[in-house]
Length: 426
Image 1 (cartoon, one colour):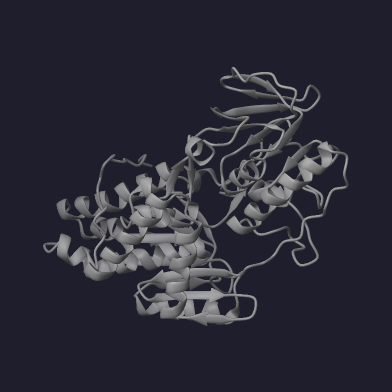
Image 2 (cartoon, helix red, strand yellow):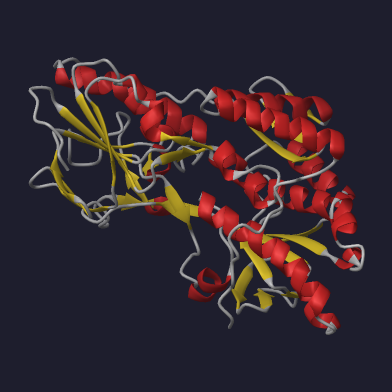
């Protein structure tokens, strides 16, 4: 990999997500050599992927070059690589571009879509965890309406305009709200010769409420918002299969659709060498202690979505969200320096800053530690928080200008089929 040798300890970070970037920043200008490996050369602001999928934003407004994030840091190196295996016996990382030895290893590889072992759903449904996946979904949504114009088969036309979202978490709720607004404000103008009123948006949730991790009031308010937008919410229904045409459930309910969007869960993106039952626990995540150390190792760590850390308040592990990842990365930076200097490590304490979700124009729900509110003010808070955590002044300005334009014009001008996407037919 042409990484120079140095007398400084080498810290290898796998993953340039929220956790990996936070750690790298914390170690900047310290007497350590930092090597960050990622299969992409950019950091993705995942909370806004759904806006790329629905034409509200272009992908470059929520992505930022990793090299630019860390360009002024001495002793920092980035390599574009797929990590294939971790050799814990030899302290070596094996990748598609070569091998690299480490003194300290941090796995911050994030999460991937969890299909719970259903190969048919994995094959035929659409995921939304990466920018390429979001672009695929954007193309498919638009192509469906183009195809709906061409068919004289009423059932086929309805299936093309029927969208089923599996999962009532923030991703599913926000995507459903965005699609409902497209149906209401954009489709009638773009497709005047198509009866877009027939378009249907369904959210299928296996539990008894949407936004399960938030307060009961936020969940109910979000449901009210979606129903007013015309979204159909099906609770206590579990999707069991999808063959590319028909969605079957554990009830007598079925859906005929050309587009099933899977937002029903994620699992840790583990890596060979640390993927055995000795290390993996609930949610296919790596079991770590309060210092983020992988069980059995003092020099190998896992942070972010891929790490399973139990606390008093989170017996099922910390939530797989940006804030725990950022805080873990920052604290691990301090602990690595303590470890190198022979000082005691400090246990991680998660500062829960709350949760929020937007359901569309002037509609959002926010749960903070002391306050819970919904509606227009919550929507402004949601926008401010997301702008604040975007990396780069340009990205913040581009997103802000797009939001203002979309709000004033009630438009989404990024509804472009730049890269056509064709589903595999059943």
